[in-house]
Every structure is written in C-alpha cells, then in structure tokens.
Length: 604
Image (cartoon, rainbow, N blue to C red; front, side):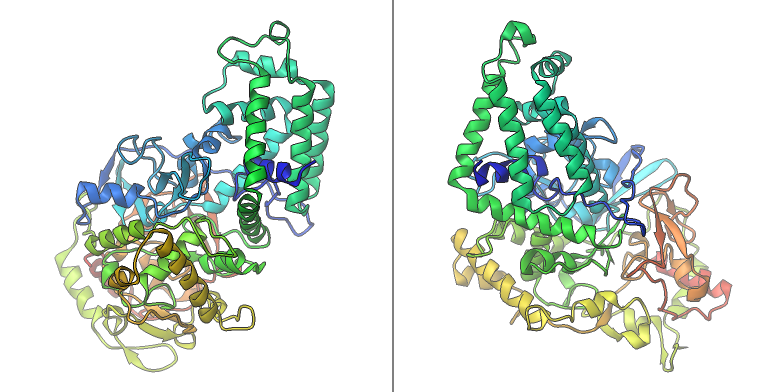
C-alpha cells in the first residue's frame, strides 16, 4: 500500500486538525472521559450594537479570510455531528460560534468569523473554510429576551469542545461501515444523502468490509498513540479493499437510483484523489503533522472551556514541534480601540500588529511549510482587518439594560481616582493603572494573579529565549508571505506600525484601560472571576466555580449570570492556570462603595 494513500485518508477522515487519533482527556484511572456535550442554544432576535463600523466594514470584519484554512467546505458538510445528527456546517453555533445568514461574503451561511476561500497553494482549487479574528472577537450578550452582538468583544467559542465532537464523530463514522461510505458519498458529491442511498450502501458492503471497519474502529478507540502514517495507511487499506470488492456493482441488485450513479463512480473519484496525493504528498503530509501536534496538545492539557485558549502553547506545538501542555488558558480579550494600543497581549509581549496577527493566524490553522516558511497567509487581507480595527469604537452601556444611576456613577468616579492602600504596600488609584493606552506592566508579586501565562512565555525554545525564537520564525513567514503576494519591502514597511517591531518577555501582566469593560466578562487575564462585583471581593470570597458558555447577562453585577440551569461548562478555579487569586485592589471598600464603583465602570 502506498504511503500517500494513508496520508490521503488521514486528511479526508481526520479533517486536517482533528485527525482520527482520539484526543479526549483522561480521568485519573486512565480511562477517557465522556466528551463535552454542549446544548443547542436558543436563538433570540439579534441587534448589532454600534461600535463605529459601516455595513461593509462589518461584513469584512466577520467574513474576510486572513489565510486560515482548516479543511474543505465539503468536509464540514459531509461529516455528521453525533450530538445533533446534522452536518457540522449546521451545528457550529452549539460550540459558541455565532450564527449568521447566508449572503455576500458568506456563501454557505457559516457563523461569524468562519471564512471561505480557495487557498493560493490549493492545487485542487476548491473552497476551504477557515476562521478570522471575528470568530473569537465578536461577542454576544442576552438580556430580556434580546441578543446584542458586539464586534470586538470576546466570544464564548469553545474550540476544544468542537475538536472533541469532531473526533468522536469521526470515530463513530469509521465504526459504522454504512456511515463510512455515506461520508465518502457526501464528500465527493457535496450533497445530502437520501434514504435510498443509505440502503444501497448497506447492500453493497460485503461482510469482509464490515468486519474490517468494525475491527479498525475498535482498535482505534483503544490505542490513541498510533503514528499518523500508520493510522492513515490502515484507513486507506480498508477503503480500497471495500471498493475493489464492488468496483462494478450490479445496479439492479444493490438498488442504486439513477441519481446516485454507481459505486464505480465513487471509486473513480477516489482514484483521482489518490493520484493527486501521489503528486503532492509532501505538502499534504506536512498539513497532517501540524494537525496531529494540535491534537496532542489538547490530549495532554487541562480543558479550558468556552471563551479561553492558550495561543502561545499552541504555537509552540505547531511551529517548534514542542509537545507542550497548554497550561496557561487565557480569556479571549476585547479589541475596542485596539488601534490605540502600543503593546499587545496579556503580558505586553509585542508591539507589532502584523507579526502578532501572523502568529494568531498560525494558531487558527494557517498552513505553513516548515522548510520554506511559505504559508496560506494573505497579508493584504490582514492589513484590511487591521484598518477596520482602527475604526472599532468602545460600545456604550446598552439601552436594554437598566439605566445608570448618575449619583452612583459620580461617587464611583471619585473612588476610581482616589488613592488607596495596595496589598503589599504602596498607594495607588485605579486610574493610575487603567488609564494609559500603552498599558502599565505590573509585577506578578504585586498583582498576585495566576502566573502561568506570563511565566510560560519566558520558557526557552530550542536553546534560545522564546521571544527571540518566535520573532525569527514569524518574520521568516512574513517575508515569504510578502513574496508570495508580490509585496515590495517598501509597501510592507508602510503597513508596519512598530519601528522597529519588537518581541519581549516581560514576566508581568499589562493593565489595560477599562473602556467597555462591561462587555468583556469574565475577568482577569484567565477569565477566572465571573463579574466585576466579584472582582472587588477579597479572593477568598470570590466564587470557586461558576457556569460559562452561556450568554445570559447580569447587568447588576456586570458579567454573565451565574443563575443558569444545565450549565454548558463549569469553570473550576482550582484547575491549573485558572486561579482566581490576586488583584486585591479595591477589595477593602465597603459594600456601598463597591456598588458605586461598579456603577461607574458600567459607564466607561
């Protein structure tokens, strides 16, 4: 059996990033935990909150590709989500992705932030789906039976839950011989399967084929550490033997309708795919290996839950082949007035918008050839998204929420600007840290919050400081992307805002301005505190656990409501990287002063 056959089926059945290798977390006894089941959300009437974007800017923000290419659209439509019995293309909102209507820029009616593009390197010239900034940075809150969609706000997307569901659905498909061939049919024809098609495939499957698939599915479920080439090769063998057994089926015996055509046509299409793989094996194998690294990272890491990820951990796994556990889950940040930022990310690790966007695109699935650094990135599209960010304004307190109390706002403003004794010594006001656009870096010993995010970025990579490693690698990708897009050095420099671009390891956390803070829950860099009111309590009085993933808003305490039946996910502050300790500033206020300060923060 050709190696390329295995790679082809690893790609087709493994869905690039979510290969058939099982990635479910394990309990202490070594057994796999059940997959995270996410409920289908109720869809409420949606109003877009004004953040200063025109209609065209909003469309581009939500659907313009930046070069992320996860897998072909056909795969998203061919694989059935075992939790909904619908194609994944129709199930994405249950993983926190915001539903959107089909229209210009969104030909398949995919959620906000899901993009469609024919990658420049794609020799098949077919539509791929990817994600852009908006998938994570367009949020939604719900109150009083209405939904407010907010471009630039953090979203409650759960990428890992999506991955687990894809993984389990692939295993289910492989374990059911009929479903396996129906998947092939949907993939090739890119159309729904009728009941007559299902009966036809049930008839054509020989006992040997059914036994092969059942045996392999059982082995796959029990052994999650098979190398990618072995997994792919075995899948290829199974399907080729199935197809050889019925390459010229008796149409009358198996009951194919004229619409369906013969199984020989399916076999012919598969042979064409295999011939393609023979020619471009190296490119495809590289893509598979990137996906396997991401899967392995999920396997060895704590579950982050909705609205969080560990992007720098993922980047270590993808770019440096470093099997690093993802122990620094970080809350998705807001992007309001991001054009005014000087330093980016929770630890202020870079001043380059373009280079951080390249790193983010890699974490979101952009293809990168490890030998040449040629990638699927689209620099001009990234610039266009950056220009939109410059126009993104802070949203005001929504009219559907209870009106603000002017007297409390005034008293809260006085508290915000009042000098208070800080834990560990010193006298500061809230304004001292939270009014500068360049962001004030706070020592871990002072802020006292979970240290993993700041400390992990300082860990060396390949014998050199990580900031240096990421800088050198990202710049190689950047130069190759400019060459592919025929962009001159002069044009590239004109779009780089940092002179010179810099990466650094600060070992500290950056204190941002609090404009629009009401729309950015949960709080702290790791999302470990549900509301602003809870943040003003001493750490030992803050909730040890709380529900996340829903969108029900609490305008009194300012954050997502904790009064939720059947929570999607329960945040556990005892999990690694999820401590709610620290930021004890303002925790010595009286309760009346706390409520006054909360009222003022609503007004920002």
